[in-house]
Length: 588
Image 1 (spheres, rainbow, N blue to C red):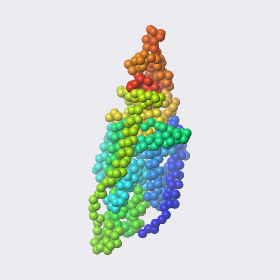
Image 2 (tube, rainbow, N blue to C red):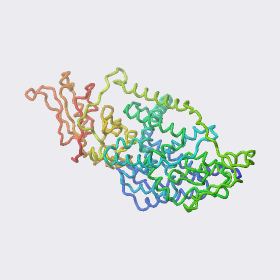
Image 3 (cartoon, one colour):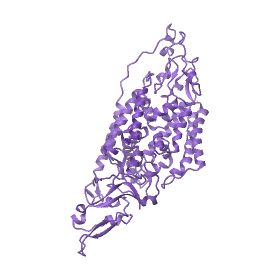
Image 4 (cartoon, rainbow, N blue to C red):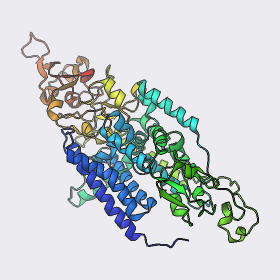
């Protein structure tokens, strides 16, 4: 039996080293995150710092403390909190610190053709699938749910064989959909994108409600440390998809741990293949093993077979739970020959099997015993019911606020309705609708970051969940480049404010029947006064009448499609002037 140790100094050391890890990576990605003007080419120093942080600091953590589970837990908490705050933040400040965490996610890095794709690959080839248990936020979320679900269970998990054909079939289907341009269906099972939708649709409403409550309290004390922000339903279909995704993954994690990762997730399948050849692995010491089955019973990946002393490395996520449970030092994490690990240990009559090793009375039995199958304990749906109830309350409040609009805080006015555009609008920097659709994984990060309420998930079937632009709540300010600075997939390429001001994503179209000048016989001119590019000029409605009221005339060659005219138009429910998108963006 190993001696119990005081782990407080251990956690303190891990936290300090983890902060060093984040600092080094922040230095490496500082040229990318510190400016709204887009990505700068990384210097040689920043690249070296980044590689040292990712490849050297992680083994330093493990080597110094020799505790895989504790090191993994601390880093996983840092990563999941960093990415979650990135998706919840509406102020644009968190991205300067944790924006790099989104860029080293495997699928976004591949789609962006970024050198950051080497990070998960190198980590997997060296340490195994530690990416899935540390960097992937969906994987960490499953670990949290699985940990809660196994409270009070003596036998939470059992070994099960690999569902290889299911994993390969899902991966092949995923690649076919992705390459074939049906990215919307493919991104339903992409891990980072799924977590982004869950955080943005289920958690951000609660985050905003808390912020607004603090803002109300602060204003009562003459403090402006917090400010109110609108809470509204951006897309009901996307909300439903996020809720269903969360329920499915939560049930699977509650009952079976890493079931989703090891059967459905395409990233898990790819990294599982690479992890078979990783340098460091968890392996058995057959001479020390007492076949107590604790490692198998606490393996949430169901990849440890204590009877044959084998580990399925394609499913092992290097979480370290088995190491902390083994009381005989029969498991270790290090470099080992694959043949040595896969060689089964012959069963000895003297060696107790299964639960007999835990029970001194049963240990004296003449024949080994195997743990009987135990019926699955009923799932406690109380916590899940509470989470879903909270999400429904938040969504109901968002939908109620969506329909509420006041003029000057005195009188209720009619809410604007979006126009049916023949060509949807895509953000500046996306180059074209095709480029945007092929690279976007619908992670909702740009939607969460948009400060003007312009971006929201599309409800069209061919671009479902991918961001689109609409100008009922604001317009795309020429000086704002926040969406291009946070997009991890390259769907929105980095763009400077100067380039954005000369990029035409669409053009304004005037609809005479909606204009208040024609309908109400009154002067207006809001659209011309607020056009940042000077593309709208007020012309007489009747050219032969010098006293005629003036209506807008759009110079399409100068219009950039920012939507300022559509946003400030007083016509209800549809603006008298709206922006029609362009399939391919133009420079003017």
